[in-house]
Image 1 (cartoon, one colour):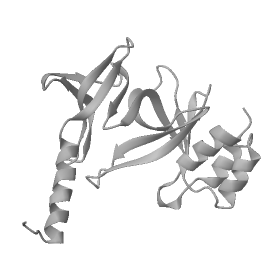
Image 2 (cartoon, rainbow, N blue to C red; image 1 turned 180 degrees about the vertical axis):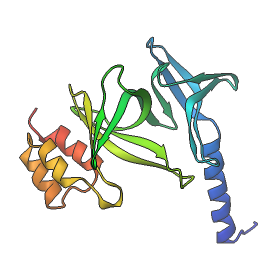
Image 3 (cartoon, rainbow, N blue to C red; image 1 turned 180 degrees about the horizontal axis):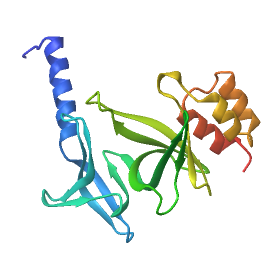
Image 4 (cartoon, rainbow, N blue to C red; image 1 turned 60 degrees about the vertical axis):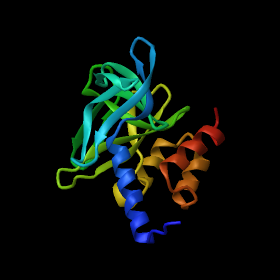
Length: 197
């Protein structure tokens, strides 16, 4: 039996992980017509630090097709779902608004972290100074035409904004402010299971 040093095993694992993110992964595409196509999907190029504006899709290793957020309602890659949403960011004096209104801004893919009366999404982006793909979480209540930003980078949840946004659920506000709930996903789970329906 051949024994490889731990450092070599780690290097092989990282190389495989990076390669798999470069390759097509098992997934599906849901077209705007409602048809679901199963095959392999690619949505990013990690080596170049970029998200693809049009995802790549192929079935049975052939017939490469490219789809933009205008062509599909959602897609899944390696069991992670992304939804096509209208998105416009408006910034004024350190205050940003994130709209989800038909025809405003552009259609983008948002990673779906949780769906329900309160949905939680991640808006991915690439920093100009970095080749890494970053992201921030957004909440959207059923029936709303805007997103509420959940966090501010390393500073965690935006407690002041979220206190106002979740005024309909005092128990959630209390848990956010006392630090019992610290992540956007925890917020969504609590809201959907514990807040009045």
